[in-house]
Every structure is written in structure tokens, then in C-alpha cells.
Amino acid sequence: QVQLVESGGGSVQAGGSLRLSCAASGYHSNVCMGWFRQAPGKEREGVAIFYTGGSSTDYADSVKGRFTLSQDNAKNTLYLQMNSLKPEDTAMYYCVASVAGAFCPKILSPQYFRYWGQGTQVTVSS
Image (cartoon, rainbow, N blue to C red):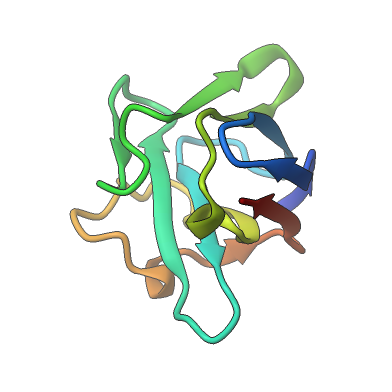
């Protein structure tokens, strides 16, 4: 059973930085992993995803140039470095993973991802 545990959320002023972590366990083949977020009253939005067997990462246009997704294979941990944060980045952030062996979708649809962490809150004040 795949388990995803996020940490690293918090409150920061606009322009600041945060790094989210996702400790992953229970999968033994390549998967599509990444981050989604959901702000109050809004739908879940894909932030960044990548295929663990590849090298490229897809980012939402709203975070390109500000957010960086990375992985520490030795620790089975996924990171999301968030710089130049804006109030509109305020949301609950979720680590996600697909079923084993699945490639990343062309469209960042939340329905594609079977496994979700419990979420970590990010609040950016102006």
C-alpha cells in the first residue's frame, strides 16, 4: 500500500519561501508523482508532476519559474521548493502518486492519481 506523508507547510509573507516534503513508501516501480493544491472554495489544481523513471517535470503555468520539484531517491522523499510566494498560492498542498507503472498524464487531472497524502497547509500573507 502506497503511503504519502507531507510536511513543511506553514505561514509566510509574500515573497518568502517554503519547502514541502513528501515521504513516500510502499511502491516498488516507477510512478507519476507530484503535488496538487486546493484553496478554499476552489477545485484541486495540479502544481507539478514528474515520472520517477524519467527526467522531465511538468509545472502549472501559475508556478513556473517559482516552484521546483525534486526527489531524494535515497530517502524516498519528494520535495517542492516554493520561492517568491504569492497570496494566491495559499492552499492545502497534497502529495500524489499514480498506480504503479503509470506514466504522467498530459493534463493535470486529480482523478488520475490514486494515492493522496493528508495535505499540508500553506498560507501566504500580503
